Image (cartoon, rainbow, N blue to C red; front, side):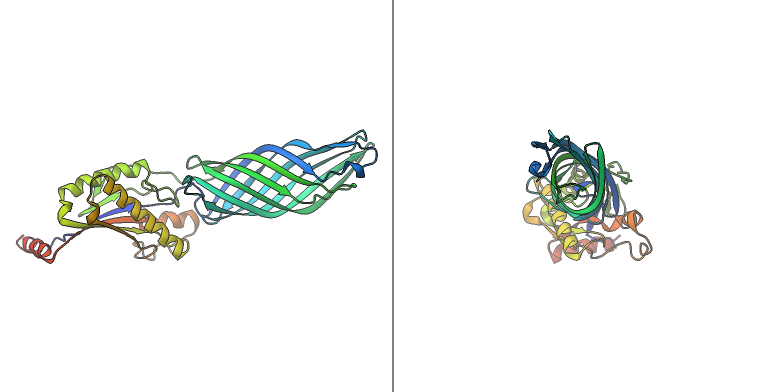
Amino acid sequence: MKKTTLALAVAIASLTSVANAALPDDTFYTGAKLGWSKFYDTHSDRVDGATKASSNNVGGGAFVGFQANPYLAFELGYDWLGTVKYKSSGDKVTAHGASLTGKLSYPISFISDDLDVYARAGAFVSTTRWKTDGDKHSNTDVSPVYALGFDYRLNQDFSTRLEYQWVNHIRTDGPVNPDNGMLTFGVTYSLGSPDVPKASELEVRENRYVLNEDVVFAYAKADIKPEGQASLDELVKTLVKLNPSESAIVVIGYTDRIGSDSYNLKLSEQRAKAVMDYLVSKGVPASLITARGEGKANPVTGDKCQALKGADLKACLAPDRRVEIQVKATSVQEVLISEQKDNTK
């Protein structure tokens, strides 16, 4: 017997464009930055014969990172902070070093879905060289480092960042232990981004209309991409043929099991509502359509992904990341009529 329920399975996979500005979980990335560096607390009065300190420099660096989840990453970086030059005395001190920091990000969706604000904090292993009267003295020490910035996602591989970093109390082998502030513009590149399948037409499988994964939403986002809009436009044509004025339409969002229950539930709700709003904008009666999120509930992959990790796990769980659009009868009479028709065949 045929059923009167129509399901559209829309797979939603994790993209690296994320983005998000955040990258997919378990993703490595690399980047570089360049900008303006300034030393503070240079205290020329403590340097014999010095009249003034020149402390503005071009600064920059490079970094590699690991995105653990949409909000947390870890970065290992190298920074060139520049040189403080003391006039009259001829003294100068250069500083550079390596840092290990944790990075917390949060999306600023009310401005742009591709924009995150973030903070970094950790340790900076500085190497300084103080030069005076032909003598050179080096010193290595550990200082705290902090940073605030913005990430903006350009596409699935590249993002940009604007950041202000502060290294506190850089110890030298001289009479001054300065601080450093550095304002930089950086570019980040995601390593090993998964290939993004091209959008395809709706595929019919036993009353199920299926879209290829990765075509509807970007990673951790709820805005429908142009590829997803084209596929939903095809669905609207099908709904018109089914005469939705006589049926109720339910949009249900699902996620995979990666991440917390609360995060996945919220994301699934946002995505289901985005699909519902799009269908309404295309003429589906708002009074007949509802949306809800189920988060991690009802996975279709079962136990086959249990032994996998990282990118392999995300790829295996792709069928779980979906939105189902169900068309249901609105009355018992309609169901009985449908069943009678089916039984006569």
